[in-house]
Figure (spheres, rainbow, N blue to C red):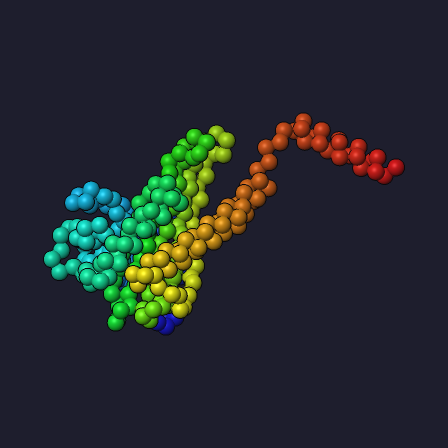
Length: 272
């Protein structure tokens, strides 16, 4: 695309809008530029939605990668809702890998997140190559200390796999969307929202016994999430905490005067 394309202007606009209002802004922009519908839906990451598969009695996540028209595919039953006769489906070989990936990723979600919903969707590329998306959504309405809050974590990992027979090449793009809202007497009303995207490539990784690539992909995702989680905690939240502490120091006038008097006394003693 050239710099003059409308999609470039639209994406540039999104980078300047509040992350917490991405769905509303996306809807408004599509109303203004309906010709950009497909490009915007594929380029703009949105908060994940939870759907229910009645046939398997399990929740799953819906996103643009599992959409065909107005229907979304369940990774558990491999069926579309609303039903779609000619919806795109993975090949039999890839469906077997998808089932294994969903089983493994569900265990990973339970161990790391202790709740939430996960889904894995794969689709065929040329030859034996394929691509997929690994999704997790976790919502929290109470902090560990019992304080009311609304916290939402969405992780979206898009992977492209080149099958070389006994080895595989992998390209991973990971996005984490996080929002936290709380309102209480101690902190007041606070709303934090943002997203973080990182990429990684690895080549020549040896395949597992079943040649499914699941072990390699899940290992890459686990390492990437650990790095991004540390980055969010130490840099983004740490920096925000430092700024808030500098701006809001709840110290009484008498306490502040006493501190200054003590500082003056120490300074005078050091000067003698």
